[in-house]
Amino acid sequence: MRRLIRELDEAARWLERQLEQDRWRRYLVYGLVLAAGGLLIWMMILGSTLTGQAQVRDWSIAWLGLDSAEAAGLALTGLLVYRRHAAACPVAAVTATLFALDAWFDVTTSLAGAEWYEALLFAFASEIPLTVLLAGVSVVALRRWKDNQAHAQAPSPAPAQSAQAD
Image (cartoon, rainbow, N blue to C red):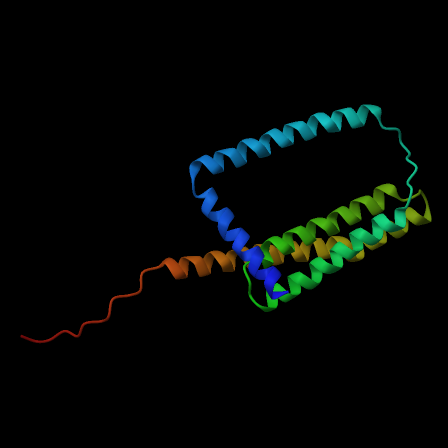
């Protein structure tokens, strides 16, 4: 686990160094905007071609995979917060996103009636509160990281000189 945290930290530092260069920042921005545009086109194609129902080969594997990722995200977020590690910010943000997606797909894929109400209950009782909590953890971790960075870069105060009478 320590090795994973160390490698994540090294990868984040490498990316930070790359993004300090304007060229890499431009590439990233252009790439993200291009990917978003492509995704919008893909959404229009899907919206016009998909039917309202789909046959799924194995829902249980899909949901178990999502729940496993959520459990790992919660555990890793807890560990990183405990250690006051900078990686708590992105891990908490990703885990919050997973819970938001879980709520969305639970509600939108459930059958009408009791199953739909059960999905709403789980969404409002657990998944949405966890999403909000984890988003808050992410914001707090980011602020603490920024404060630590500012502290580390601040010049140390000059030693006080005693006033001597002439």
